[in-house]
Image (cartoon, rainbow, N blue to C red):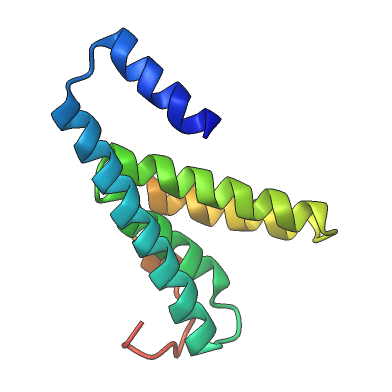
Length: 122
């Protein structure tokens, strides 16, 4: 709730039009869907050494939506890695995941991380 209040306040102070605000929310919503789809595809594929590819793909797809998609991809990626770090997962693996996340968000081809033999469906 504090986040939403802060975003609304900032938009009022900065004079952001309601149309661009609605676009941002729509991009974030659909970007979250892109991230979820990459996650469910990763679980379905259950392919060895494919997690970095799905991290990059989810972030890439979300970022293609626009600034709202970039924001939600960064927010969800950081939250996920923060939780996993708190639960005791290795720092090196978390940093490798974040590298793939940043790669995808920057618009670079997620196939850079695609493991050999992963079905074309993904």
